[in-house]
Image (cartoon, rainbow, N blue to C red; front, side):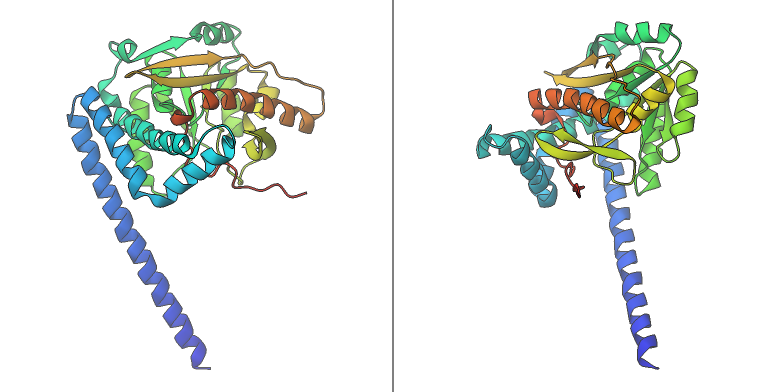
Length: 316
């Protein structure tokens, strides 16, 4: 009878020490992020972006786990098409682009309606304008590609009512910082959890809803589609919303080009509707996923390959 309490006590103490260790680590990382962010904000944007790219390369070498996942994903996607040296070069550029995007996000408070056009140009914006004239809102999909945060900020600064669905992080302190910057650019934040009815209401109010559905999240409804010739679990939420609301669905890519950015609007995506809900969800999710793949193939260094995109396995 005395052995079990000692085990429980020992286990409890170990858990407490681990929690304390994680708490200290999280606090250290948070303080480090705040210091780096402050330094980057004090720098001119161009210099901050250059240093952000160099920091991204440094992180590429320091974070072995993420580096290996990136290289593994790239090899799987471009098997037989790119050499190992090409894969490693692209992997390094992925981290470099992420560092640049982070530097730009930190400096986003400096960007406003009077200077945004010097940094970002949009191609196909008239498609969104035309869709909004119908009064049924617009669903704008994007990827963790280029600088997607800048894309949302562009719409907000141009006077559109923008609502972005986001997935809360494990640390609400980061969410507080990031979302305050987003709100400063007229972006409304919608936590992903239980958001379906709220999004329907927003679309009926003739507003834009932005969604990034390019990650493997097995806790939400999805289907397996072909993505880079591999079966990838993909959210069906965007298509389900379009089917319910009849709102047009577009894809926006914010492409980094020589120090500036170009937003390209694809769509509206024509949905194939047969009346078979499950089939329609699959076919149309595959349709937008094909668009995403086309751009990622063209600019592989601008997508976040360090996410485990093929994590969820299909079981027959």
